[in-house]
Length: 440
Image 1 (tube, rainbow, N blue to C red):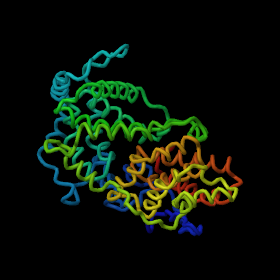
Image 2: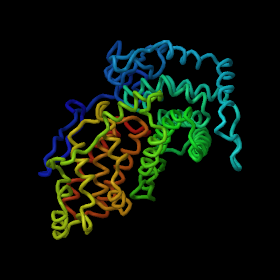
Image 3: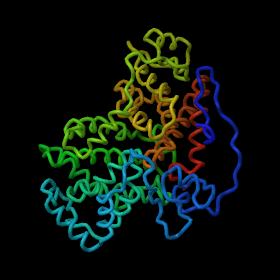
Image 4: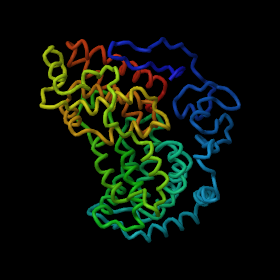
């Protein structure tokens, strides 16, 4: 994208759109939003461009809350109607709100208060209410696209107030967002995160282990999405602890199978679902590979061919694809090649997520075996999403960097691979310097 400091991925010929970045003085008078997001503020007044593009109200003024959403800019976002206004007022009413929410949660029969040796807190308190307020005014806007946030903001908090498992997941996600904004994205989860996540996941599993009631299907659907977001979190005190340098962590990669099963059970496209509009947005924008995808020039062009083409690669002595009776790279390489031509934004976000949600089992086997070209494909995908929302940017940057370092160490004799590494290594380092990922 022109003017954003990013370079284009190399093609099969090795050419790249890289260019030198200008040096900038450090912003000391920027708005609080930019400082929270760890991005450079242009210090324009009354509102900076970064806040405008992020769709929040710029807050040089101390009376303007952090990351307060701007008014909807299009009809697709809809209007802040009386329902949304009521939701906000409910979250600021304190004692009456606590009484109402706890009363609603007591009526949820799908969650036993005592599960094994773990005892759930029976009532939420003021600290939980504060987390709910931050979720509704800030965190909910970061889960998906701006179009999706309209649906989530309108319905999610009401469902959480009636479903204890969803309430816990919302609390854990908000606490994780707090940690990210504090510059501790890679640190261990806080006690609040751990408590609410353990309770939420256990209660969610309990709910899924029994027949799903019709009135629970909407809560189950959105809970699966929040679990997916939470699973993307990564903990490491150094890059050496991150796969493939450290032990494998594939829970985030395997969660897509469970989400597919939940989709079938919850069916957000049904007539009475509050998520029907969101489901239709997802179904409309999700990437679907064409029956005869075109093979575009790219660094992965040699992985997109048929079986004979892959086998011929193995005769040149380089660390090329493993010997198999079919090409296990082809499906993933073709999808990734098409994604490399796209910018990751609201209109393409679901397509980039579908790369992982629809991951080919053969490709997953290659990743777990630390196949060099399979890992490099993942690094290139990480580059495309490393400036995405907070919950995915941290893993994209740190794990992408770990992949590049691993390939440099253990496949240094492969000139073709080493040349292909340069683009993701440069772009991921650049994204981290720009403030993405929540690193200190």
